[in-house]
Length: 423
Image (cartoon, rainbow, N blue to C red; front, side, top):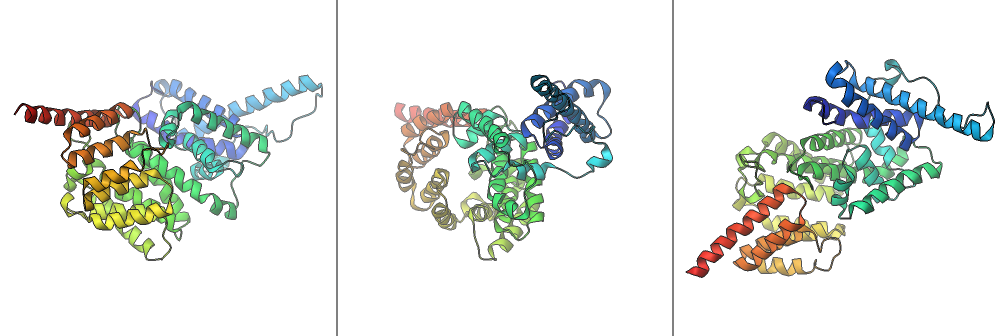
């Protein structure tokens, strides 16, 4: 899609999951539908720059993808006919009706339908989430692998196996029932959480943030919340996204360099999003049943309510992380709790907690562990150890803005250390 003007490129990214959802809903074959949609997107990337974007780009893409799908199915039928010499036999499940017209398609958005369908009952939660990130979020295999802390080849195999497992199961790839939707909701929310995180802090490449992923995650989460207004975790996730995204404008300086939370200009934070997020999480917590997304939103609210970094209520954040850690088996939660421990009880206590993560294979080689340890060594006045860990973190991250920030911190401390040593 590199030949398209930027608006059209973004439009294709936005429409891709909607088109895929419509094609899967009509034909039921996910793998074949995905191939057909990719061909439609390629056709748009080649034709729209010269011919212009059609009046109804979504309908155009669906029509082209449906044509491709019909051609594929007819080709498959012909092949089977030749093999079996049964001229009138058509394999069951092949719909060779002509491509749907605009009236049949309607104007509804199939993205949410696709989101729930990807959480297929034959898949493990991890495989369902990975497949949905590809189909709905549009993330690359490398980005998904970074989110899961696994090698890219491992994630590619997981996604491929998920598609094959759906095909082999014989279970219809269709919209789940009301009961099934409730059972799949946890996976759906986790997908949206990962899409938002990848957009807010891109794990790979030159961009610190990917606003299109943040916007899509927020849009889909608002839709889920509107459908399930009484679900505490759906409300908590939406509040968490709002309270986190409110800081977006302050996360980089005029040169595009990363600005850590403690040094951000809080006047740049979006108070409208903060107020909406606080109202939402306050109403949700009052219902009594609390889940991980609600606790994370509560932590984000404490940060956002502080007008200055030094006003942050770190004891409250530490208590909330303690509750969250008891609910989840996630080393990132312990990592974040270590920061709160350092702010309340001093860097030495924080480093001691970090040391318990050294043998956790999910985090032992992750750049964030080294980066947090470097920050705590800097807080403790151990410049040599801080420089070592900042450089280690810079080598491990695949995000260029984060790499540059970590390397700059190491260089600054190294310069100060050299000056002090010469004195």
